[in-house]
Length: 226
Image (cartoon, rainbow, N blue to C red):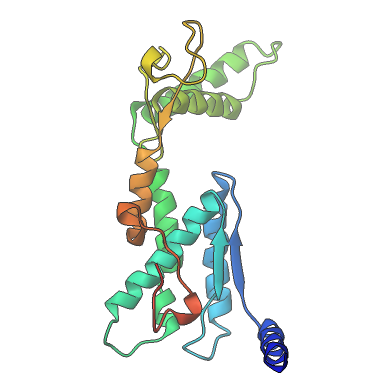
């Protein structure tokens, strides 16, 4: 009984320790916003840290796109740890470059080179002319037109570093590749997430070959857990 009380007391004491936690929520493109916030928080917190073995964050977690952001940061820390293996270093050194790494990831997945973007300025100019010629019609704004075209292009041809269609536009997914509904009139459009997988593994090398990162940042100096 005494041992149990001592254990509970130690647990309660540990709960009173101050820890900084970073939790990324899901939401697709919201992950790009999170990357910018992390960049600001990193420099904001770092300037007030005087112990070089203190972590910027003690806990990092996320869901959906937030989990991808979290994995890239943790993978970067582990990579830096390996770089300094056997050399004198500190936790703060392992964190260096993590905000830039995350921003580079978002620049990479959002950098699609295609002919549509080359035509966009011309299309926007033509749309503005139509609005000027017919002011009595309720024609949407040029920006609304651009967003519509961009969405349609993505649905038809995918995004180079995020997802790719498993069909030939404008035809739907082939019959043999459908699911749930195999009737001829069912129109399914399936996409492959292999481009996103490759993009993640490019920036979170600890996730290559399907590995799952499971690590205790507090003990990152001494031991990794996978």
